[in-house]
Length: 248
Ligand SMILES: [Ca+2]
Ligand SMILES: [Ca+2]
Image 1 (cartoon, protein in one colour):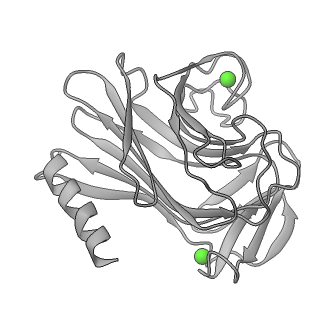
Image 2 (tube, protein in one colour):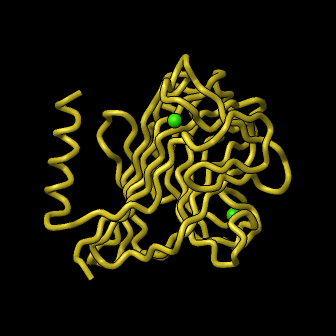
């Protein structure tokens, strides 16, 4: 355990010497009461299910996450918003959380999708939001994963026909029902690209690059559970930080 954290700290220092971090939001659901089939859950921030479909719950996952209340997503699309974060060159957005599936996930392509994007229309669920998504198949050992750039033009958030994979695909976490940690670092490089590093558990981070650096402002985080019945996706200890290269 100690070595893992030391490793993470030294990676940070090497990458971002002189940088400082600002918390965008932190969520452990300790402020939420237990509930089933809600369309929105209020914790430190608000988690909203797309449309009026009641797909959210707050549960204590004593078998797995063991971290008090956690958010349960049965299906569909859930988002949280935050004030605009614009990355300057050398700045990075860091997302981390713990998760597991309470039931073994089904094999349905890329059913687990996580997005950080810019809800330019004001509605984070209308699909008109350019951003980046991680898409993975958590049902298969080493199931395929990808990072994609989504234009936000087709009304289907985290899917549809307006996204392109940042090559190449890579093996994803073998999630099953075990607890995993996920970490995403979106760095706006000095060369104008946006570099997206995906890390699950203690695996080496995998970096994919949007050469055009098309999205550098973010104000929404979404989780999409596509095409699965009764997925029972559980998530907790979500943190979003921005690492600034220079103080303003
Ligand atoms: Ca918790
Ligand atoms: Ca889309």
